Length: 324
Length: 298
Image (cartoon, rainbow over all chains, first blue to last red; front, side, top):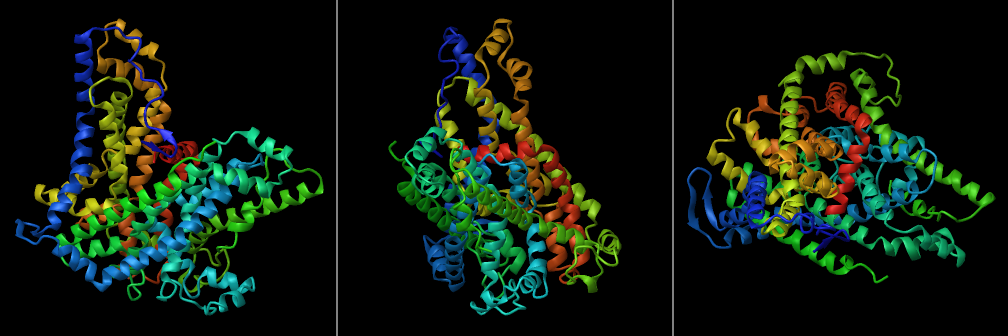
């Protein structure tokens, strides 16, 4: 099993060589090992692994929060969720969000990484600046965003001052566009918001990946007369494949988990008119607005299956490192 | 706003590429892009600070220097918000410190065992730990809420325990600590053993003190993550006096009558963000390390 192109196994297995203690020493070492991992492992098993099974179990019953299982319903809650137009809306929103946000943020992250990977003066400062929006809380940043893109907000005023309004008119967005309050643009606003806060994170991921590309590859390319544009597309981009795979996977999981910004921007219904309804917001509402924990559990399982299969599909197309 | 993507990529120059006037123009373009994008990253924050010193009628005035400069919004936020800002800060500190400490302890013992102690099933169990990264929080919402509700952890002060328990140990922390212990020389450990030290003493007295940078990265990552966390406190904390800052901020907007009263809301946003900005200024490399590590691991 390799993730991000690196083996999970330690390069050297400490203890497998030097120590020549006999079986009693080895047994006490094993006991110590189990004692060391006991508490953390128990938490992982109960709160992570166990919760998969428990969610599946709850989703099969009419579940009463106080009394537990009441009536076995099989897959009813799954069909009920999948037939609900609001959930379908949430899924299509998630799809649109993923299609817009993932390529945009990956392109930004890769571009930034490639630039700050060069020997430039002040590149440490620029790296730190580009990562800056990622350190603030989603709550603070979403509230700030709502202020920025309000009808009379800084964004609308700035584009007017820069004379960019004709460009926006092409899309039918007037000078006082209410970005978060208009159902046509609310999701787009969240896409740009999250591209803004996450581009620095993806830059760091890509930087780690870029540092794995040896310099002599570029030297060879330069000798062969390749310009910077060519060497980027012919060398850097393909060699970054494990990086693309990792970033795309993280991005996809993140896209399907959209919640904070949708909830803060549009409340429990993802207003206006469900345009910010996300699958996780739907799940949250099922549980805490409708006290329908069984349906919420079913939605959780559906999302898990979607994430897992999407990851496997990505792994199939991007996961294999190119033969070098 | 999507415009920068393509032109930026074009500027990739191999370390040995180009010279002369073409190169000079390219440098100018690169710096212009860097500064432009940097401003996009920073201006919104400057705007929130600026807004917090404005009067309400001035909110839409496109000027970063408020006129007049007033502390009214800060005073108003400090005096009016419920639960009060000091209480929100206290709650955020309690949760963040507790989660940081549990992660430091649990991840370092588990990381040490996975790196240095031989026991049957070690590799398989470590893969189980890493696999937890694939389990999304939304799948865990219902089972964990049902479980904790049954245990009484969603009532009263136990709500703190509930949030800390959910965040108590993360696979990222374990991974970071394991990497740190893997890179340490075996000889030190052997010397301690020969001196008759037990496994725990060897870990605590010899190995743990060498893991400083990794411990710092875990501490920063977890403190910041918990300080900013919104999802789990929202799920597990019904009583508003237990809320951390992010929940308080959002509540002020959604239900507190602050929807359009931007200066006090931005004052609260600035207050909530300052501690993290200060941490970032001082411990920037640990932030980056933590992120880079999660990049390696998946």
